[in-house]
Length: 245
Image (cartoon, rainbow, N blue to C red; front, side, top):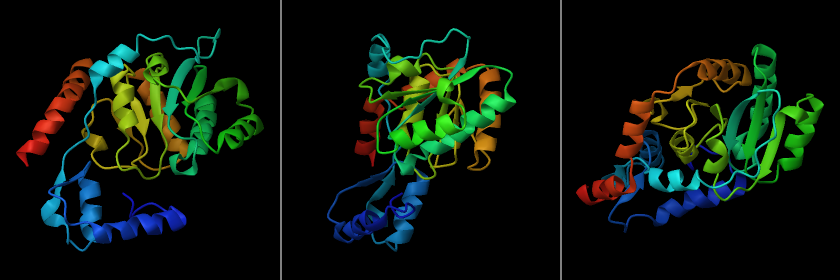
């Protein structure tokens, strides 16, 4: 989705690189939305080379990672529900929207909630300062970079995705594979509506995301549908689809 993102000068350079495309045997797009954007912005010059093949997820590897010790989990004595967020602490991931969502959720929900943000980036201090300003410091944990996010995600009661635009957020699949019952997300990428266990916010606002999180915390995980979906996205199946094009 490089054509949909505002990355300043870097984005201009990245988009220009597509003028050199054309010698490939196959160009894989992770979603239909991505495929349509690429074809539209290259005037269908590459259309004969492009195929839509959804990203794989290695559930076996994530299951192994889940057995590792989670050292960055907050110590909670109030029975708070954990909301997991995972990504770079950069503007493109809209991490401050996660703090706004926590603020709305804390006001709406009768349950205690705690946001665990896994990742590192340039906005770390901005996030901490904003949470302090809203009086949410005690309900927020920034773990920093974690080699195996599944060690923490498996303890979370719900997942949260706040990006405005993504190619495809693999972290949603990782959250589900780690056992998170439901993931609430902005409509930041294509094909999200096909994933069981995912709730797409009607808009990009913290108010809508917080309402969806309340819904997510009350729903039961659709185990069979999620397990079947993730199995169909295994790496072996992914490569078979490439060979079949």
